[in-house]
Image (cartoon, rainbow, N blue to C red; front, top):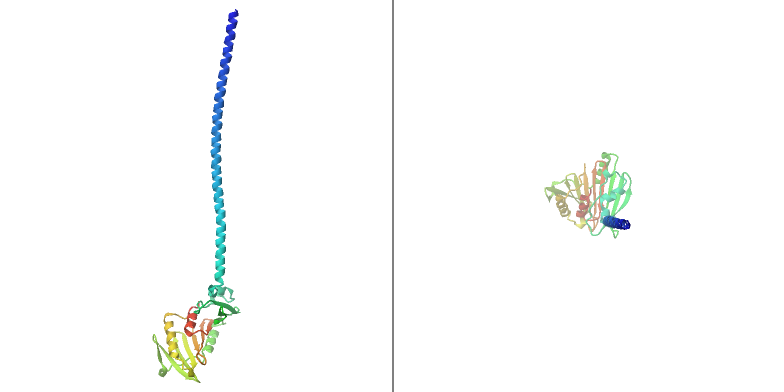
Length: 289
């Protein structure tokens, strides 16, 4: 009986030891499995965090690039504006597109010269500015007069024509065979002498040309006329509706000249006046747009 009890006790102890061993093994496996899962999650989380950091870094970089580009664009616009502002104070200020914005006359009637064949910049000054008349003085930076340009809107084309007739009165040289002079390009000019003055004139389309000088100065008016005809052979003056006139006047001594170029376009009459030589006066008139 005693032996049987000892046997059962030993068997029970062995069972407890086996159960404890199994439980420890299970816990170890569970712990390993848990650790494996936890480690994997951590790795995945770490990788995800790294990806997020990379993406955040890229976005920050893009953001920084964009923010750095923005000032560059602003700087370009500022520089460009400055460049434009600088240009508007230079020779471009003489251009009709800039000056016409300041005139009160309807844009469709505004014309201005664009070329001034002299050394240095030319600055325009508005002398008169109404819906029916504008007048611009052009001067160099040293305040030397270069030219003046005027546009006048009349109530009717007949009134504009009357203005032209008054301007041309007494300046047209009549056609006379005994004074005919070949000016080239199929054009003939005619001379006339009156009251101590020598006059020479010719026609080109609707334009009447006239040169006047003091007889005592013995100016070679036909030679001046030939140079003008040669130039106009390859350059066109504005096309007047009815008539236009180029009047070249050499005062006593012949050392300087006054040139007036006037023409009519419907109700408008335009005039350019200058003391530059006749060829330069023509260049300015040709550039009128």
